[in-house]
Length: 139
Image (cartoon, rainbow, N blue to C red):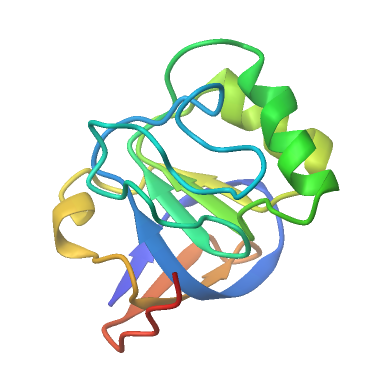
């Protein structure tokens, strides 16, 4: 499936998808040492986001989240790309300072259609996210 998105931070990446249907706070919902989602209300709880394409509706919470994204990046534990439904200043700043590809505007319906473990290719130059249903599960 091919989905048009709006690129905020460019780049082209490919890899496993992690989808959280609930917003994520990078301060408190992501473990800084393991990059696991630890939010109790997330369907993606215990999933590692390092080097994955993270798809979320938006972030929530503290502006410190931008620096958490940067800290994950410095430790080699950041997502390879973040795709969101709604633009969010916390994620935008975090991705800009970390040079993590970022796209916004994925239709909300895809949060229920795309499954964690699917394979994706994000082409930031064209503003396209391509999802393949092959499962690559690597926790």
